[in-house]
Image (cartoon, rainbow, N blue to C red; front, side, top):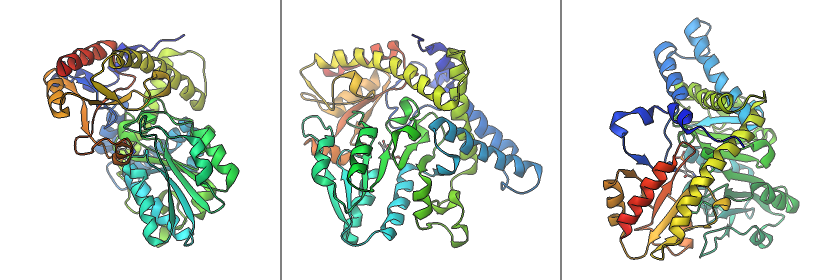
Length: 411
Ligand SMILES: Cc1ncc(COP(=O)(O)O)c(C=O)c1O
């Protein structure tokens, strides 16, 4: 089995060489990851050499447009979708806001949608708000103990009038990885429903093979997936064709503009190609067989997840033997992403967080906009949870630093 070369991986992230961050272990990756050097280099190149209006016929402008086109092409290949299905928007929240408005124009009063109670508000609020306009909103609730979604519950929620089903690939507070393909199959067996999957908390652990998952719309945020501050969404072509234009009227026929009333930053789009370059570099460092990007993606996901799961096991084994904390989500590392939320029973989260910060641990506290899943588990959102999230660039030394910090903070 090929093991991840952490020294190589960390050499690709300038943050690990940054003197002001020395000694600090980063455990709030679910909020936003460090950025790989390939992305930073492309951003720098774009802003330095081609910061002109793209797609005119002079050299700097041609290069700017080509750099943007390259990002669509490269990411589509890694995600195993057609290039025409890739959309770059300012953020996942913005992308979902636009989608909700577009879909509403296609539906009739009394049409139904199913939204999960496990979602970040981004894939929840805009859909739920459609209730005010006559759409029937059905909630797919979470287990109050584990925070998990049970696909069997969909049996009572799906109907011939269900137009859309929205749920997360992985919740940013619960951490459980939902079986997307199975859920898609189950829903589509009942009716011709559009399945919208929020992959924001999943994609940073290895780019998803969206083509094989079967979701009609899949979204994730590149600033959490080692890249620039953009939201990527894929929309299957027939759905894209059916959706009403949300941009300027004269751009209605342009797939890249139809769902993007707020045009995203050109330089950042160009820089997204750096995510693909990073993955290529990681692949070439670890494997010698040539492969297409989708196959490389599957191998790298396995490589990243083997590393992350081994570290997660160390953390979970330690957390599980503590009786003074509540672990949110499954405690089996095989079932979850390394985004672990805990609620201390005897100490305030503020106090624990302060000790962790003293120990140079960058963690997260609060509700993380995962308000509905927390409420579904009867966890007060005023205090929320402490979130410990890491990625493939995290090392066992950092996990040790975290465990030592938690031991000191919890007493
Ligand atoms: C699971 C999940 N979905 C959606 C979002 C929203 O993403 P964005 O900040 O790109 O709008 C976040 C952000 O934290 C998230 O964690």
